[in-house]
Image (cartoon, rainbow, N blue to C red):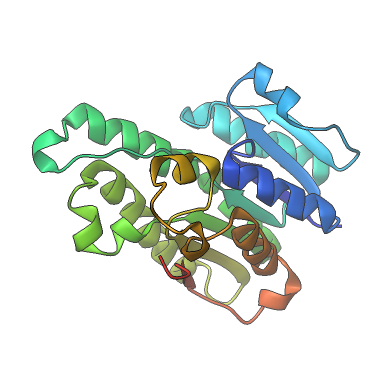
Length: 229
């Protein structure tokens, strides 16, 4: 049985990803931000829900070490925590930048920093970041400055780590979705056909493929999951 960490597990995407990995027989350790969020999950034998402030480096690192100590080996990490903000450069303050940097980059970096070393020692493991199309396309990112910049760092970090991991079976993948088909997006964009968007379940299945043995030949992977949006 493979063991995976899923952060941001109670969001729209996180709920679908958690269900997918539990259904496929993984041992799943999920993080939530507050104790009250534990009730979002139905208890099962293969699910371990922990409260972690991923924006605190020491707390995130201690969480990873506790998971390794308890379960022995972590095979994959799906780092889904993040936040969204509108604004071009005129509207984006330094505080806005720092907030998005912390939500979208630091939460992934702090988990990865501890976990990557563990995977290198085992010469095996999968880490997945959730990127964003505005980090890749200036046309979309110009009015999402803080969000796009913070997400763009994940692509570069993945490049650095994949270079360090060459010769092992450790990989860092970035999955960049377009618009997700969620209730909130349907409400905020009622005139758009949601069939052109990406369903959370589709992302979940893709993430399971990446962590599974079926993805063993993949290296330095960036997956643009846009559907027709």
